[in-house]
Image (spheres, chains in turn red, brown):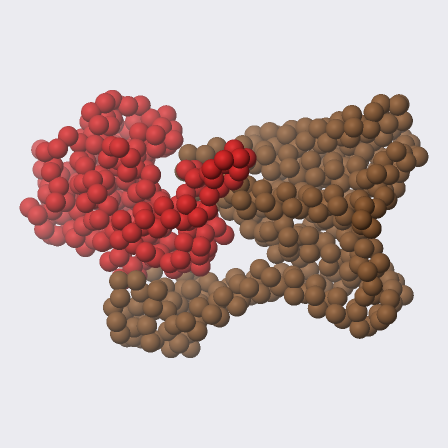
Length: 261
Length: 369
């Protein structure tokens, strides 16, 4: 399904993060390859969110290097990360409720009409709807009519729209990275299944995916590899196939010694 | 099981509702919500229609009621022109307020800006400067105030306080320009005041132009759509790599420009530039905007509805005047309507989200409960 030997899309090495005397992250190495889904696990306060924020450019690491496609990068803001092809999908989704699905998917990369109307900034709604339909079809998620306002969608459908919006922004000429923060936290069983399938399909298109979650069952099911953090240190990094639930729980709680000592 | 959805807070599925969605259960379709019963979705559609088009229904009902009650004086072409004329100026102000609110930039400096534009233009006209220059200066000045409003608000100051301060500042400058008096006798502005084109007074044409341009802008152009999106969720727009701040400043500029235009049209109608900023102006505009269902939270609203909102106010006051009822009754009726429309909006939003929650959870769970 993926080739973990392929050059990583995103690679972090020796990432330190200090808040005063508090070491939130202690020399973390982490990488994710194209088409790979890596689960980032850990208890509350283990440093998952901090690490995710370093990847998304929201935080600047105290030490260590971040490389995208083998090139060293410095993110000063989330928009730098976005430009490098890294998209974060937040728990709060940040969709515009009153606007329809197509507009939500196209904002920031609108298709303008041809000719004089285009020069005046007129948007080609029809072309936008068509493109969004094609994009959602490719991801295998046709949720509802493109003209339906987002506020009239169910929680699962919203999550799908939010994921699709990010996915369409990282599939350029080079494979991008999606950072997912608890994508199924607010969803019921069936919607979770749907989002899980979507994550796999996005990976199949070559997108590298980092998944932060508390939902161990989801992580075991959807991830190729699992990285476990405990008190700011990486204690495990294993292929999902080579481990089991109990081992992972042991690493998360700290009952099991680190793989790297 | 995790059910901590943000909208699920009050969304425990009522037994009756879950019963209605039961038919969706048996087939585990990959798109569960698509299998929601058609009846439910028709109900939601109906409620949304009521929320989005209710103002039109209300206006037509009012017209019919007055046409019968105030027969034969109300339902005449002449009276229609009167109502349109009465509504036009407040509608121009309302357009500015609406665009501001839709983008999350409530501008309370509007009366001051109107007074400033009108006094500066009045001063220039009295001093023999050309009409076009006076009007252009008035508009540009208003846009400038909007720019200042926007830039200050972006520094993290509360826009309401900032624009209240600007209300004081602009009206003070207007008074200084006018030297404490007014500029009377500005009959050269008649062409945009009481003059009629094709039987319709100039302010109605101007107002129609403002709403036409505004509506096309907000619904058809990239910047307009982004402006609405910023009001709905600035964060969503920011994450799409767009500078949402620029759009907020832009909304303040539009708001102020409408205020300036409104001030100039008022001046033309009364042929006098008056430096006193009337706060009543902003409240009438806000009433029209709120009647139109423009949510103060931003991101939602349509200009045609705002226009009808202004027309509703004008229709009520016109109809009651024809019947010889004191104007304060009109004020009272407006207040009642306003609370009524808020209640309706709240009720519709709540029931819609409740029903959507029901369909969202109409999956494996519903059958077992």
